[in-house]
Image 1 (tube, rainbow, N blue to C red):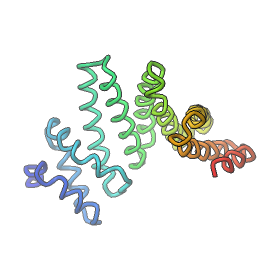
Image 2: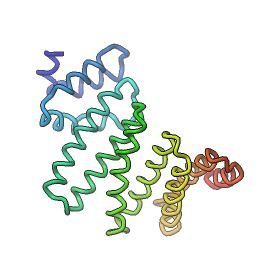
Image 3: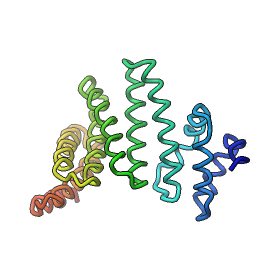
Length: 212
């Protein structure tokens, strides 16, 4: 681990590629070494590694969370310096949203929920200020947050947030079907699942058929 710590910045991408292909303890060693890096080094390397975590690699979940958390800290510093800048708020929302998904993949559903709330609140503010630019991202955050609520057994709240996401996507899809119809269909399917979780089987079936 000590040797890896010294060379982390030079071999990070090769290391991740090997970790993806092995069931050895290497992913745990990589995560432990990353956790010992200086914060500035973590954030620099996290920016390089983040594209590798677009998909769910369970054996990399610990490193995934550490990388996403480092990017949140970087976004928080940017936001502290420029709290009124749209790009700083957008970066913070994106970073927290990604961390929430990574925490969920790692099984930390409670923390995923609280982090997802941060992203949702920022995106709601952005969408209310500039709906034409950010309303779709708000709907995405609502949908993601509904998933986190469902994971935590908060099925009624999941239904409420899922419906809000569905209403936004429907409105956007009717205005620009070529851009948003697929999102509307996904949202219908998600909402059908939340209805089913709440015992509303007939309504779930109706929305599920509409999604097809």
